[in-house]
Image (cartoon, rainbow, N blue to C red):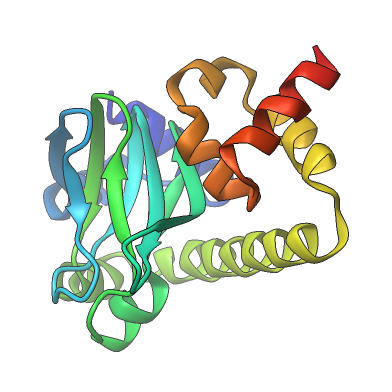
Length: 190
C-alpha cells in the first residue's frame, strides 16, 4: 500500500530503494475509523499526511457551533494544516475521517530529518507547496466567482466515486449553501 506514496513522489522525482527506505522509516501509518479525528482545532498536534485509503474533511468549528467545510481530501492526495505544521502554531482546522481511512503522516521534526537524509525531497516539497497554494487559490476563486450549482457539478465530475461517502450536511457546508438549497441543486441536475 505504501507503493501509492512512492508512485506519487516518483511522478515528480526519481527515488532509489535506499532513499525510499528512509522515507518509509520516517512515516507513521495511522488507521482511523469513520468520524475519528486526525487533528483537532486549536491543538498542538499537526501532521503532513498522504492518504492511502479513505476520505477526510477539513473544517472549522465556528463560535456558534456550526461547521464550515474547507476541503475534502481523498486517496492519493496530500493534506496538511500548513500554518500549524510549518510555523508550529496551534491548529486552525479539524481534520476528520468521513469513512474508514488509512494515512501516512510525518511530523515537522521527522520531515526535517528526512530533508537532511534525502536532500532531493526539497524539490518535491516545493512542488507540493506550489500545488497546495494553487488549490487554495482555486478554492477561493471558485467560492467568489462560481455559482453553487457550478461548484457542485465540478465537484461531482472530479470525484464521482466519492459522492456516496459525503453526506448532504458536509457537502452543503463545503458549497456554502443550505441543506435545502443543495437538495434543489441535486433535483435540477438529476
